[in-house]
Image 1 (tube, chains in turn cyan, brown):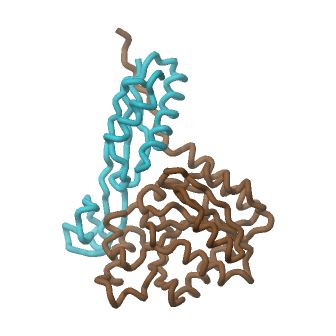
Image 2: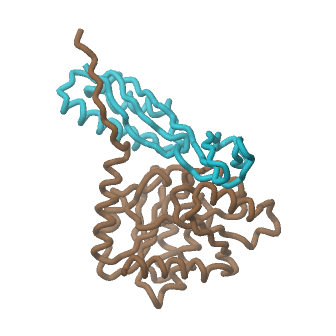
Image 3: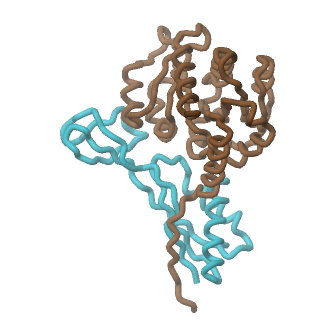
Length: 116
Length: 222
């Protein structure tokens, strides 16, 4: 739902780095986004295509790496991936314990860009 | 053809917004104003909770409200009728408030004459979770009719908040809402979150919530 302002920010950061590097063109942008984030990759790309027209980043491909939601069991210490929107409850697959701590899945950053 | 070069960036996507949010927090700190970002679904009871809260605080704290609304001013009018100063931000379709918008609202306010600002964010459990507004603390409302499964559907919101207000507990008898299950789900995502069970209609639970705000404001001003 909020892909447009997110994409504006991505483009701003990308162009700043591309200009600093005196690049002629941006080929790709790699993003690392946690599974907890609701942004939809396809919309990011569409907005990016629209916003980047006439800039160094026109035509660049966005590559989104999704960081899985991981919990750690407080009972046995096992770290496990949770399909957060599909499960009814968060249960440790190793020991069946019900107490777990949230470890990762909220990442939201730009990793790198490829330029020529 | 020129070689492809890889430039490492490792920058947060919302770094610009986060920077403005930090500046807001610094300013609030120097002016000793506590700001709370209140988020919920449409109809969760944000305006009702704000009115109940500020009625309860009117003799102890000088308060104001920033009203985020997609395209109306009804909520701000309700708040102003209570004698509480309100600044309306009409986002014109945007689904959340960000730090830049809040900064615009703060410019309209006399920060030296305030102890507490509550931001009524746009009714939405998705987008507002991603954007730091510069508030000192974040709270959300989940109302009983929405269901106890919401932490699994909107997990990010539940992980970013400092407090959860479960509103409309007067509906519990009529709803398939398991408070124990809800709390277990929420605490797994966010073990530090404070949970308050309230009804803005009957007033049940409101004093404990108001006390939490008073304590937070007092801690902040220390």
